[in-house]
Length: 217
Image (tube, rainbow, N blue to C red; front, side):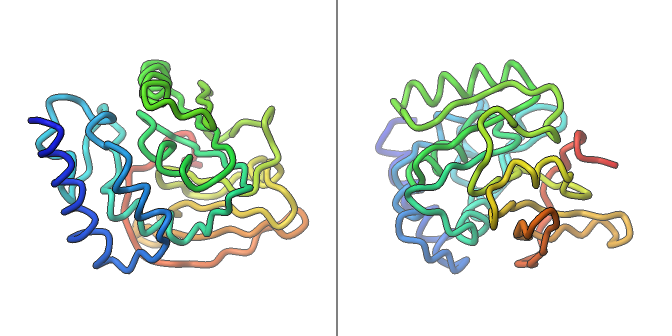
């Protein structure tokens, strides 16, 4: 497969998957057109890279379908001066997208091999406003670089831990999929707005993405 093939496939993905899902943010759309997703997936899965399917990275984790990620990021309302934390960054694809929209983005993952891959991918694309860190427990976030304007959790959780709220600025926002047993594991992508030491939840849409075990109660 050559570069022109991927360029056409990337354009078709935006035209046939992203735009029909009502993604409006022009800068986000431009980033999806620019960032080469094929860099971030295993070579054995290159034929799936611009399909509407999750791509398995290891036994428990997937790169989420791009149109779903795009719908999520479109709701995040990123600003050019924002500092962002991405939890569960895998090979760095979402980091690369967000880096085009904000001032600085930090990524964490609990897999040292994935951290190395993500760092290499970010460096190879010469993205300078992004750093990647290993954290044994994803639910602890990245306190040393806090506070953040927004936190994006790339996966589903049962509950947003209080310690992550403390890593947000006043009126900061956290975005994730909440999936609870009592809801028969139907996930809801939500925005959590920090208000003092509490959180106000706004629900956007239903979706199912892989669970992050560090967040299971």
